[in-house]
Structures are given as C-alpha cells and as structure tokens.
Length: 299
Image 1: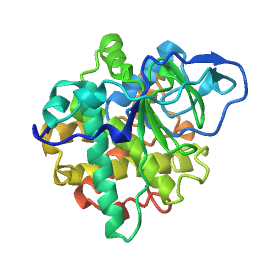
Image 2: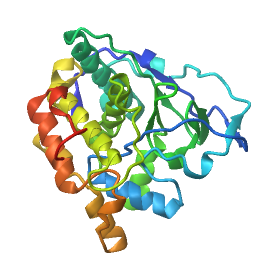
Image 3: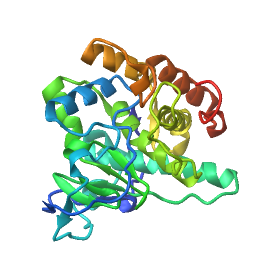
C-alpha cells in the first residue's frame, strides 16, 4: 500500500499530544471505550498475547485497571511538528506518523462522501496521538489499552508505539495496510455511533452475542473503505498481499486455541476466523455499508 507522492495531507483531523506529560491519579473514570485494536488481521493474535504479557486490559477498548484513575494537570491538545513534516503522500510513504495522518484523511474522505450520497452529514472524528497515559471522554487510557474509539468525545486514540512493540516483542511484520486496518476498524465504530448502533449493549458475549456482531460490523465497514480506498485520491493501489493480510483474519477461535489450547465460544467477543473472513469479503466485494448488517440473522 502506497500513497500518491503528490497527495496533499491535512493534519487538521489529527491532534498530536505525544510527550505532553500526563500524570495519573485515582478518581472515578468515564464511559465505555470501544476498540478493535488490530482486529481483522493475524495481528489480533499478537495483540492478545501482548496484553497477556503486559497484564493489560486487552485490545477491545477495555480500560481495565485504569477505570478508577484519571489524569491530573491535563494539558490541551497541541499542534506539533507533524503540521510541518506531514505535507504530502511522499511524507506518508516515509514516516509512520504521516502515514497515519494520510490514513485518517482517506478514511474520513470516503465516509464523508458515503454520507453525502445518502443525504446525511458526516461528523468528523479526530484521531489523537499520545504516549504514556492520557485522559479521554471514556476515562483514562495508557499505551496498554491499545487503539480505541471513544463515543463520549468522538475521538480515535492511538499510541504509535503500539506498532513498535508488536515488532520488537513479538516479531509482528504488519506493514502499512495492517496499520491502516487497525485505524479503519476504529472508524468503523465511529460509523456505528453515527448510525445509533453503538449505543446498544456490546457486553453480551458468545458466538452470536451483541459484542461479536458489533465487532464484525466494524470489520465489514472497514472493508467497505478498502474497496473505495483508491477513489479517495490518497492511495495508489492495494496489492494482492494487502488483501491477503485482511483475509487472514484471526478470530476468537484461533486466538483461544493458540493461547489456552481450547476454544470456548461462550466467551467470544470478536467472532471466529471464518466469520471475520466472511465479513471482510462481504464488505470488500460489495463496497456498500448496506451489506454489513450483522445485527440480526446468521453471522
């Protein structure tokens, strides 16, 4: 996956507070964060294992042990060097943070057009880069939380060190498309929020539970973007290898089998590998969000 070298980037949809020095103190937290982490790729398994090593809350946006903490001395979001450094697609091809900026622009460009076609107004959701810890509308978060969407403040949060840790600790080889997929899955949750779907309970587990259906729909929405990614004007092409990465979706069955040696469908939250591949194919082949109805019927 590559960006057009002369594509013009705009950092107005990204806030960069890396290194802003947030500190944590113990007080009640906020609302529910909804995350997919690296859902949709084999990288999901690595995230699961990584959180096991860390003792973190998991990649599903669960703030875990941080729910009773908050940040003290909060600083407002500030603009940083990315406004200067991330100007074109050429920058996105050489710098990770610029690539994420480009992904945000491509993803929201698609959904803005999709909503306009349906006579609706798209509400921009900014992405916030951070390091260490920070306070969100859904409560405090840290690097251990993994990427997530917070419906309370409409932000997607990501610590870019997430990708480095996957490589250094577990040898993950996820490339630009893998990184884009992490982000576009979280924006899938934003679309659900705009449609009023995300407000429904996502706590019900099990192979046919609400949590699985919500995550599979976010996967499907992500693949609708993949179908139209070139049309947004930022990317040159998606390769067969990119698509193969998406189809190699690790579901709860493969995660559980690899990690605990047994499969327990009653505890599933993201769906089986077969389910995730099915909804990847559905979203990518149709290119239509209307094909992503996982809320009823068979999944």
